[in-house]
Image 1: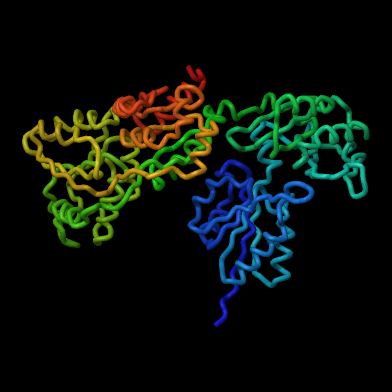
Image 2: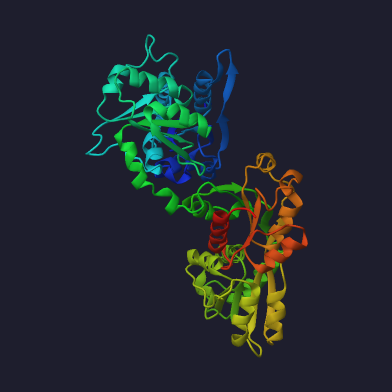
Length: 522
């Protein structure tokens, strides 16, 4: 029995910022069995897929490093013929200097179904992020996208620099940084005024984006002095001057260029990635704890029976006045189990819900629930202080918790004469080791901050941090703590805290980093 031919999606990933991929691109990633992605693609986009992923890398050859396009074409055909749904994920747009048309032609010749999903091209996005409008009714009514990857600009088959010099608009050169001096000289020698405004954008749309400006005649020297490197883009034309008044990104993104380690569990970072990228930071995923199922599912079911009365369709007859959550994981673990047993939010009846903070409260929303109590300070001590007046003299409390954590809540409520039952709804364990690429980034000074969002995470970071990175603590690598309790735990294991959040949630943590980053290391 023959295997049905699969399908290939040639998807533009957009440049740098993972939020710039299209909705259709994300849909394709969710369909994929295999993803073959370019080096310019932000690897955070792979969180949209469960497919096997492989990066297409440049290889060494007689003429230097190059991309083996023939090998990529062959893989696409072989995978599709084996029945796989394949996403070829390409930086920017697949048909703008992306060789997507070559891949499409190969697939068409092999009779393989394919779909082209356009992406935001780097020329448009990088310019916008640098405050450069490539068209403007007073400065440029046209824009030309040009490849700067020419072996000899004036040789046979080279670009028509006379036409480019006379072009009445903005010139955008892709892949031309190593030839910037020759490109500038060729334009000037063919009539482009030497004082024409020009810019080079390095690592456009990434948190470490850099931009230099200079008259065309001085551009190569300014690029050399700045030490820019590929991937970069050269922009030439009057519109470049507008960037001085349209430079929006520094004000809008206070964490621009900061590489921030998120030391949470793998499944807890999805909501944080856009939070960091929208502030201009590069999230560095370094899972330090592992979240697992409850060690005793029967105990969870027994607690749910006490909480709801146990029978599907029966009137709720809860034995508890309050249900308390101290983490979003606790919310999801308990309420997912409730749903799997054929019950829903109605089964909670008149039981009131208390949570430790805004993040935990937000986790209730998908289940159609709201918190009745959120303390002013997002700590166990704050939750105890807020609950104590409400649970005096025998109120019944069910606390959904992890396998480990502080007992401040239970101790405080018992002191108020509440009846407190605990149920462990998820396991909280230690990660054995960070991925090799994270260790290398830490060893090569490619992380600026690590966020410590709980005592257990502080202890895990202390255990996993490489020696080379530990030596830079407080200097080029700094630690940010979410609360005094976390700071105390970090200090106890020898980790110096550079800043501590005054608001004990992730937004407060990032606000603290933004303030400290402005001041710089001590």
